Length: 330
Length: 89
Image (cartoon, rainbow over all chains, first blue to last red; front, side):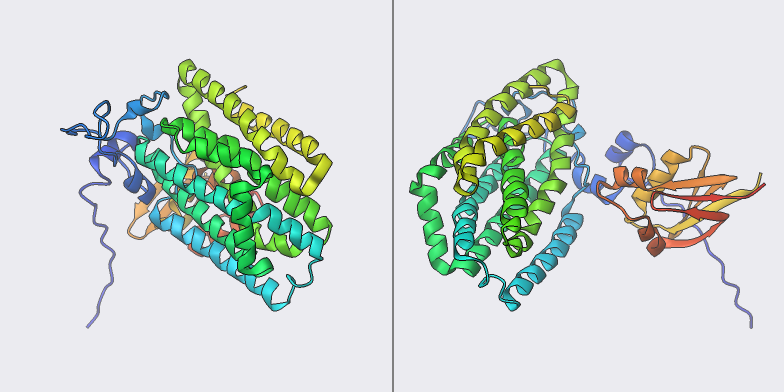
C-alpha cells in the first residue's frame, strides 16, 4: 500500500475580527491588535457614576487632550499581556542573577562606608516615589480612554511597583531593615525630600489623566531616571567604586530606555493630532518639568553636592531636546 | 528574471518580520501557507534590521531570524544591518 502525503491549505473563513479588518485591512491580525484595539467600553453606558454624575463611566472628555481616535496612541513595544510578562520575566532573571552575584561575592560588604551611606541616602527613599508613580499610573489607566493608551499604563504601574521592590531589596542588602526605616523617615521628614514628595503627592490629586501622564511619566521620570541612575549611580558612584550598586539598578536604567520610546510615541501622536493638543501639552510640559527640576535639585545634592545644579541643568537641556523631537517645543 | 524567496514559520515572532519585508520590498509576493509564509521576489529581496525594529518596537539582532527561518533561495549577502538575497545575472 502506498500513502501519498498531501498538504491541503484550508482557507479560513475570516482573516480577523471585523473591527480589525476595518482598521488594518483584510489580513491576519497580530495578538497585540486583537488584545488592544476597540476593547474600550464606549457605548451603552446607561448610567452616570454616582460618584461623579458630570462624567460618563468611561469618558474621553475627562482630559483636555482631544483625539479623534484614541487608539492612535499605540505602544511601539506592542505590549499585551503575554509579551509584557515574557519580557519582564527575562529581565527579572537577569536582576536575580545580579543580586545573587553581588551577594555571593560579598561585594556589598566591600563598599566603603561613606559610599554605602551615600547609596542608601539616595536610593532607599526613592522607593516611596516609585510607589507614587505606581498609584499615578493606575489612575491614568483607570480614567484614561482607549485600551492602546491605558493598557501600557497598567504595565507601567506594575513596573514601578517592581522598581520599588528592587530598591527595598537593595536597602535590605546594604543596610538591613534599619535602612528602610531611615529611608521612610527621610521621605517623610528629611528636608531634601520634601519638594519631591510634594510633587508626587500633588500628582495624586491631578484629575486629568493625560496631564498626570505628562507630569509623572514624562516630566518627573524623564529627569529623575537619567539623573539618578545614569548620572549618579552609573557615573559618579561607579567611578568612586560602587559599580556593584550599578549592577543592582541595571533594570531601572534599561527600563527607562525602553519606556521612553513608548512615552515619546504617545506624546508625538497626541501633539501631531491638533494645535489645541500641542498647546495644552506645551503648557503642561513647561509647568511640570520646571517643578520636577526644582524638586530634584536637593535630591541630587545628597550625592553630588555643589555639582547638583550643573547636573540638573544639563539634564533639562537633554530633556528639552528629547521632547522637542516629539513636536512639543517648550 | 529569476525569483528569490525566503520562507519563515508563521507565528507571532515572524509577523513583524514579514511586515518589514513587505515594506522594504514592494515587489515581493507574500504567500501565506499553513504554518509557513513564503515570500517570493523577482531578482532581489532585502531584509533590513532597522525596519524590523520599527515594526517590533525593540532592538533586533538579524541572527534571530534563523530561529524561524525554514529555507531560502538566492545568493546570501548578510551583515549586521541587512540580509540580501539575489541572483547574479
